[in-house]
Length: 206
Image (cartoon, rainbow, N blue to C red; front, side, top):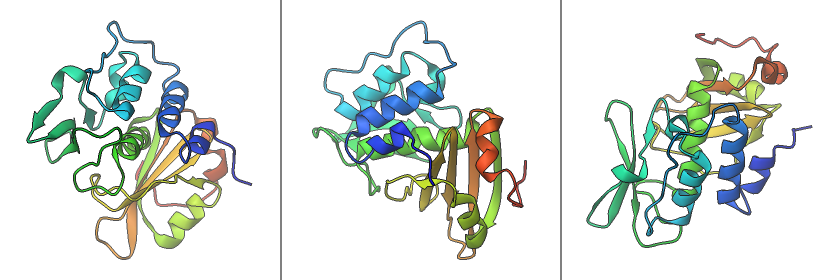
């Protein structure tokens, strides 16, 4: 039986609540920052929820890739840049003016992309991580005890990429054009979270 995960169960009904709940749980051990992030008055609801949940903690905005703090949001022809790849390979932009605006080139609106972003960061940069290139069969074995995150595929990460979750565990699978498999990253906030997948013989790099 798949585990109950509060933030995951909220995605279909209240994505802002899902985002806040995930951040509160995953970053519980990180103290609030010295200065809270104050969203601009015209920021859409999903971005306001993220800044408020971050409570000034820089790590919530990303360690591998980066969500911009409020002071660094920029607007060009109605598109607001809100995130950057760590080496400048891409930026993420939403179209200003809507409560949950579209994001350039993405299936998901801003509420979904922000969830994708913090979940992918968890898979890359958590206290316990692993990565490897897995075949479809290997990914199926890894995902069997987990739950599929109910969001469309993300293309900004490389694409198309999907997410899976267990209690204290996030898995991201990025199919980057290879028909035989995908690059998979796994992040856990404690080694005990690996229990459901510990005995799988998978070709992790680390």
